[in-house]
Length: 430
Image (cartoon, rainbow, N blue to C red; front, side, top):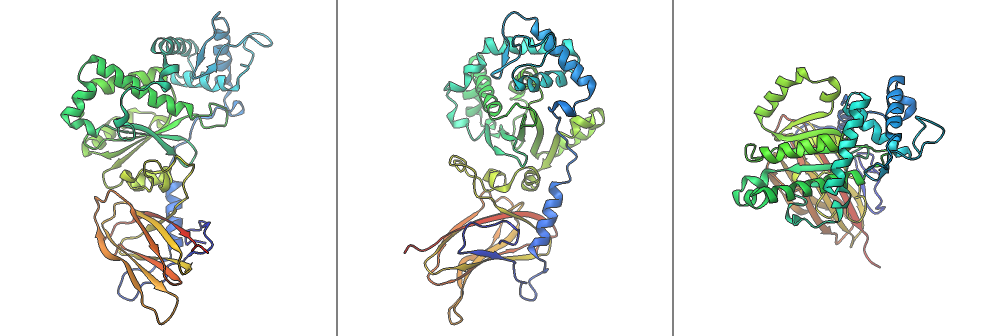
């Protein structure tokens, strides 16, 4: 059992609670207390997602839902959005429940987008259905739009948050390069193709939703503002925003902005008093240097991309969920040792480690079990800069039984930092 209470599938290695560092190396504290602090952080959000379960809705919302169903039942032609039929043949009279339980989820999204004004929601829904038909939105997933080099860089779905919401990452910093900008946005035809590609990414996110009462019915958006060319992207940004507001209502449960410049924070603080509490609860803002700590509150480290301080590399999710990482915090002035015990001779151990904001020292050594053997330096202690864009990843094959000891020294900093690690042990072959 690891010090963060995460079971390990490898019986040959057990991460023991870190032993106190030698005298003079900094603060002494158990990793379990650090984990408890990290868990408390995750519970600090005031955000509460809207419910789609009928029993949880107020009577006024249920009446509006029944009225919208009744309006749709008068349409002679079938209406379907995101593959969900919205006006099936009436069952038991006007306002009867839709045959597909997903329909109520879709209808509630349009109602909430228009503050439960039924006729406004009805008009919005019809415009969305007309746009989808004209745009051929149902066919966009199968198209090759020629933006393979932007996937995984500019806009992409990657993993899910702690509550199961699919996560969409957006980063437009690559367009500060003029050649890249001209290639994608150089004329009206190219811009239209990019907008179609961006809709394709959104449709992938919608495809991953349950669209059922009690299910996962919205995505999380993470937008990286680092190096984003604001003026040049204004036209494209406005069109994307308009498209999504009009045709994907209530599809985003939370919006996380990372690498936020100082002026964005000032602007948000100015408009914040004019926003409803419900709207403000959906927004999260993280300045540069605080990205990993912010994302870890909502997304497990093994699902956060490496460029944002996580452990997930491109292709990691193709074969199913990754092995969970153990999370902990390191206080300022503290040095922590992670020990992985019980390693057999001939076994191979692989480990990953990441610390939000880094700016500390890291090293690794192997301590043989035999008293007459020497400790081996696996990774010489080194300073990891704040700008480190990759987690520690290493592999070591033990010649004799013993334990691996990873040291994380934050004694030169007063800042508390979040961290995560995981390991795999492959036993020696017979």
